Image (cartoon, rainbow, N blue to C red):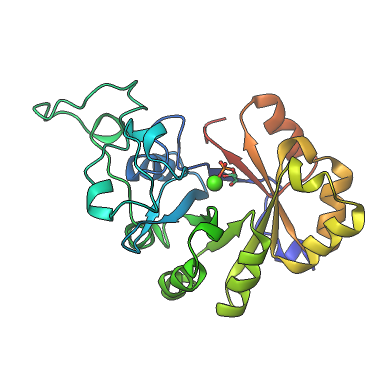
Length: 258
Ligand code: G3P
Ligand code: CA
């Protein structure tokens, strides 16, 4: 049953481009997602937050500063203002885009913080969408908003994930047909016994685990309970090889070429 449920038909894990192909283009931008498609990744991973005026924006941190160089809180700023910022600013080493450079394209061009809707419309059906609700407790009611937006796209390969397991429960009630993944890192797992891992695996379609926690025994345990397993974040050939050899189903990587 597990084998037939697994997307890993050839025994190789699927490649998930972390925040897009973020080794090659600014994270969580259309340039990074386009690059992931071009490189043949199976999925893109992206982070969703909510702006002051209630728009669902694709950005990892609650401040725009790290990627854009401008310290604006996502939840405290309207979308129009956030869309003035260049999400490729830090990726280019803080260089201002030369607006007179008509040759600039892809990673070299000004990048806007994408909307979740833009990503759904542009990529659903072309590549899997692994959508993380980031700090959902900061944005009360975000689960209902995300559920409404993704619902028309559930016929495509789409997975919702969060570190916040209460948020996943709310998503399950709102959208029982959606596939859901629990993100488990070292902090949460410090309290975990085998029974806790088994409970997570029984509760969700995927358990997406920090690389340092994964060994053959844990992957087997999670598979026994019917979950698929993705590893995050894979950044070396050694880790890639080790995680593939212990049977994980997906590798979440900044560099899909790895
Ligand atoms: O997809 C897993 C990974 O994205 C979780 O960590 O901080 O990169 O969102 P983070
Ligand atoms: Ca993420």
